[in-house]
Image (cartoon, rainbow, N blue to C red; front, top):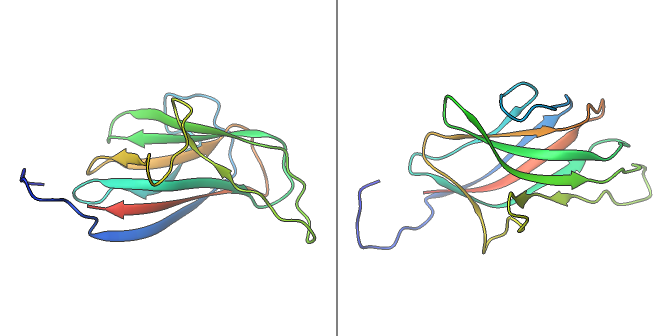
Length: 139
């Protein structure tokens, strides 16, 4: 994007999602991680990222990684609580937090530069899986 003194506004909005089933226990590579999103041509902001189990599950760690084409960087985590899924109760989504512990929100979005990819993973293998979903603003 060319440098300018005019305001920069989102050019597009999207919803990205992926299903996580494999355990990822090493934080330095892509094994067990699933592609969630690719940043837009001028970078992207993610004002909301959450994980929700698709079946009864044990507690597990949710993880987000930025990938620059060479290296995976652990960016954000959350703790998905043990959940019993049935037809008479709501399933609570777990909001993902920045690595400093603050919530990813509209006022405090996760930002990803152009060309980078966002991957998601969980720490415990879950047959039913966990859905990771993200709202994305492309610039």
